Image (cartoon, rainbow, N blue to C red):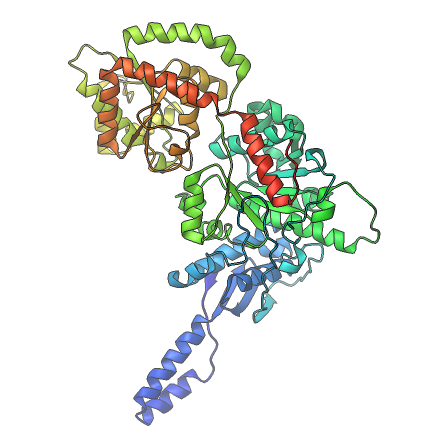
Length: 579
């Protein structure tokens, strides 16, 4: 897929020659300016063998309309991408082709966007979109229409929530579909934990909840989240297995930027099905009465992801503003909400969050682990860190450098420090230690006769959720020097186990920490080293902060998170479903 800006002007050379011959310098300059502007207003987008040629969109609604019309006019085999991914792929690529100073105008939420209120939302009319000049051609021999594909025009989407309450509905009549990332899931991250924990919480309150995910991801999710197994709704083809099935969902929750576009498609399909219905039978379904609500559960500010290609990053930014008159943004991270408001003038709903628990295992191990902690504390201070070389913003090398500096400071003192790390494979850890001259110096792989890097620490590799809990329960201090974090699930889970986190104060960590009371918030590597030294030299303070950390996390539960979502759903549905 590639994009190029072109202009077809047959008499361009003739006019320029005429201006030169008649010494019409000013006219020549104006002519060049005119044609440069004309060129900048024409765009050709080639995706596979299909081609979109149109005027450069002047508004977000025009951009979305162009993508919608293009993707609805070509088969997936022509486009070269999965049908349900077409709109965000084309939209991101189209936006990437525009000048940087122009892009900003497409990434701001309009005045009629949905915004949180004290209780209910005000009814707002859909944004009117003017059709842009678009011509479609195909260089392939076959043409096909996608009449089965639902259009994402404003008229096809359900209206925003009304302030008028619809009596008689409870949580059991509200159905919620969570859309996980439409790629193979093989890693447990904060976004996955957050989504499934909310789904389980709402299910416990009586909501009808399903979690849609790619079929190849089912076994992995079942293995790591066995309680969620009954809620899983797997698909091989999103179009066939989700779009063409019963789409009578009250709420559709997107959890990653591609799924925002998928959620809009499901809502559009539901609206289209309701329009063509020939009978109006009484129903107790809230979605039948009010239409599907689209929610973007924003758990990170994804345009900052360093691994995303430029076009995907553009699509991630668009996900906060596309069909903003229909999409409700919700997050547990104040940092994410502030970033979305700063970059896109979009306000979202704040909900609660909690660390993932395994109550049975934790209670069974509590006494033994406390004894181990006491014995370990008499001998040494155990400092742990999560190292992820595959995620540069996690600052893996900087974290290890800080830990090594602390080790060196206390080398001549009568204090034993044990450094333990997890989060990546042993081979990844070894490769990090040999990656640069600075890494080689700190990893000291040359000092070991076996050539093994990091001989001064113990690396345990990747851990599952249960192992992480046990790992933390045998630790005193947890270090996370990530450049930024949307929230900080690892620090939360460490606190739940009575571990003092030392984390960078850049992200959502202030939502669950009290600096100096149950956590140490630092600015950089130097301040992190100072904080670690202060904690190590004051063991009584560590014990006090550990108790405070555990107490803080005892107030953050799945039930509390579920009730915060219950209030949010009551708000957007215009219905009091509070239990």
